[in-house]
Length: 228
Ligand code: DC
Image (tube, rainbow, N blue to C red):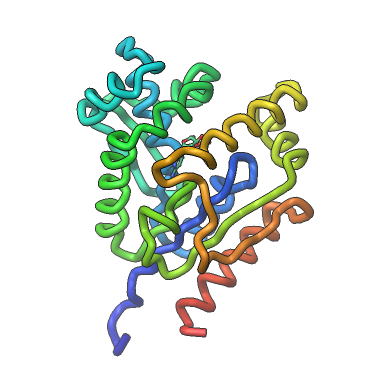
């Protein structure tokens, strides 16, 4: 660009659970002065609303019928990301075991995905300096024209160990089984499954520290901005 401010940069970071997506995305956004969006939190928030309102989660048509009802608002400051449903702060409740166990079923419903995808696109379009958006289908479906697409992977063992650490004292084997089950459901659903975009850069984080992953992604964004 001539003289003016740098063009907003859109970074899509996808991958399964426990690959360090959230920690990496937040840190990259903070370091580069970009907004940050955790799309998993949005799917968890709509799931929390369905659970709280007694919606039959075995019935996709019941989920679809009310998908437009809750108002989900995401705060995109990487230093203080927030999530609310109908004005209630749900940052804590969306991390409960109950929501985690149900989120794949809710997020597989096309009407839910259409609703949440629209929110994601509008947040990305309004981010002045640019945004790091993390999820499962960002590079493939939500923002196919992103400037940079990253796909984070790690062995199932490494992912389970990281998640158990986060959940303090959780059993590693049980966490590993639950992760594998959720990833299988997220990868095999019909509507925009967890998938690597053809033009995504794959980063295997199994043997890397978080600091190394962050540095790698920051370098990739800077190279993009410099037009390399
Ligand atoms: O990243 P997370 O574990 O908080 O995501 C919770 C769930 O939300 C995950 O199991 C699948 C779903 N999800 C999705 O379907 N698409 C996204 N872009 C992000 C998350």
